[in-house]
Length: 356
Ligand code: GTQ
Image 1 (cartoon, rainbow, N blue to C red):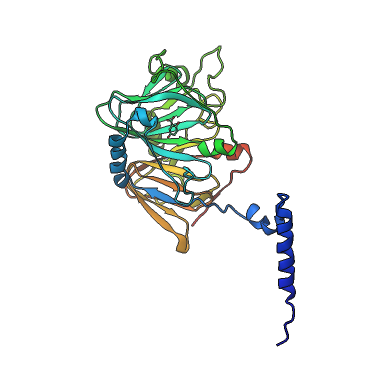
Image 2 (cartoon, rainbow, N blue to C red; image 1 turned 90 degrees about the horizontal axis):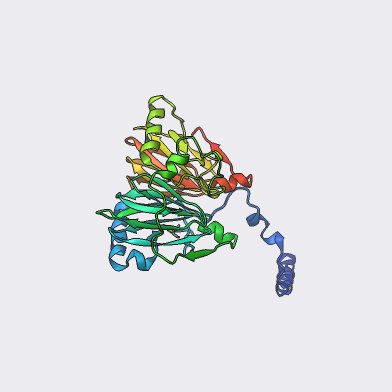
């Protein structure tokens, strides 16, 4: 056979030589990567994952034996997305972890430009201090730490306390805008009695002659579970049921009506017993913390479908644009958070509510 030069091979070789020639000038050809850079729909490396509390709890308690809160500064097991190894991220934009405080411990005061939220998972009687005021934690309480505010955690409780930490660490890393400082004392001075904050901002009222203390972040730093839970129960009694969400409310910054932090939105929802939610997808990947009840989260579809049978205190993550359907065996309450305010501020957020 005569060796005819293959025109395709010749072109390919010519292009490879060209790519090599421009590489040293830090130039690269867009046409080789356009489809990946501008995808037809979100193509995230983040995967769906489920952390069962029963399986994880012994390891978290073991952490309490091998290191103190004082030495660890924050004794946390990071919920790391299996698709994002080494990045300490649960989605591309968000960090989540479970923090343990034992009786008598203090997680020392510091501040950072990352915003944080807490959702109390187990135990009661630990506290978080923000801005000279402490809030005592009860299971299901939603607590925020505004960016650049001094905060320390501690416990006068008789038993371990565990909460979910949600932070915008990957967003701040993306913008290279991270600053942090350690305080000179482990516990900040308490200058206001507990509940002062809620009296000033938590009754749909506000002080007359002062601006909201944390700018774009909610002036309320603790949203007690009892109140949020009662609102959901009342709406359920009134029949205000959504076919996709059950009864779902968003936590708000009362000064703006928007999300409680500039980067993270948070939600609480009730699924009545035997609820079979319709499927939906949203561009904000979401982290769920199960408060009450057993149910199933059905993610994806067809061969790629995954079923997470969840129980109280379990956590799971739903990646961006992944189909999700929620089913409740008994009455369930779910907390969730996402980067929705960032996506809305940048006009990126989308959702699709599907019929089947
Ligand atoms: O409580 O300040 O899970 O700074 C990670 C980083 C918690 C906190 C985390 C933090 C904190």
